[in-house]
Length: 372
Ligand SMILES: *Cc1c(COP(=O)(O)O)cnc(C)c1O
Image 1 (cartoon, helix red, strand yellow):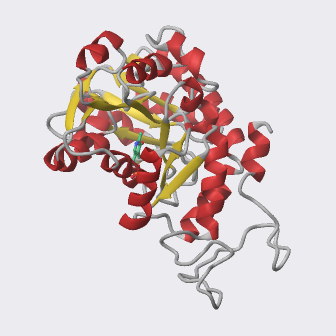
Image 2 (image 1 turned 45 degrees about the vertical axis):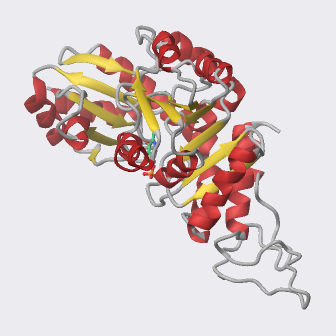
């Protein structure tokens, strides 16, 4: 089945008890057992499994072309679950510009726990290759990256990982399963923050890890998921599953709007640079075009005149909201350097925009007034 059909139907079935077309939310924490102690419907206790979570996992695995998924309580919990499935002493290669929360987890928790981590420019395969050690077990990829929209060649990095007997894991949050399917390009696992495009309405926190095969590594991720307990709640699963039904159409509209805004900004005299993989002049455009079905709704741009000018521009916007996060129906803008703290390499005049589903002419008019 094609992606739009999967988005509407995967994980959905008519409720056998009532005929309900939309799935009920099963809040029950526990499920009745047979006299012999068995539970033939497959549910015993909410942390182990629940019908809403099972439906969401089935849907997400199908959207990414994987065989199994674990729906976590947040994207960061999914990230944590994947790294914790490694063993202290293992070596990880991660992008120097990974999502700031991922770098934070590695530095503050996982390196003290015993992982060895090398941060590299993931867009440079020579540097990735040079960073491989005998104990390298996992290479973490995030493309497009945050906030510079750098593009990593997923199949090239997957090949390097596999030559070293390591796994390649891709954080696919920014592209969504509609924009890009890393498992088809060689990655072994995909991670999403479902808080973003999958939920799509800025009203639910969640994450997922999806695996190409059901192997020992993924079983360990599942053990951490269930035993550690960072599982997505039934209502959160229900919201994400509902959000997914419109995801293919939302992603097309996000991409169409972002492309128009990127072109508009690239021609504006007050704008120094625009980062959007759909622009021909973007250094990663060719790789993006080869591995992405859609370029997505995220872009960044640098305003002429430095930090104060960047703040002045966001201060004048009326329609675009100043807030962190991304992937919702409403457009958001953020001065990333001040979020990322003192050690950030993000330029002080850079603004990151999550382009929403408003009429693009209204968004462009808002930007024209703010930039003038
Ligand atoms: C938001 C985000 C995360 C973390 O997800 P949470 O749901 O906020 O925990 C991880 N990776 C990327 C690329 C993100 O944008």
